Image (tube, rainbow, N blue to C red; front, side, top):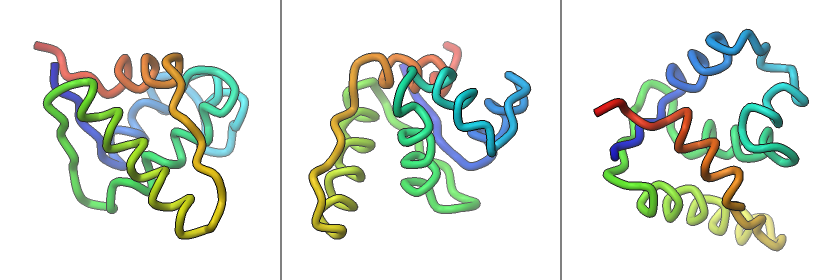
Length: 99
């Protein structure tokens, strides 16, 4: 399965679920529970505005998201968060392209 990420896709996900961009609790629930907002925000930082990222599988998406988290944590000299299965499942559900 392919997965797609862009700012437009993220905005459309929120609109589809009638969640405002400042609704941290709603975004948490939508993106896998506690820390869902953190991973949503990570996705927004991972993908430059006006660009689109496409991954050809779940593991490629996981590696890219976790890799970005690891890099930014190292820059900030903090321990990186680990992408949990529940968050990955939510990302896959929202970013997966129908076949």
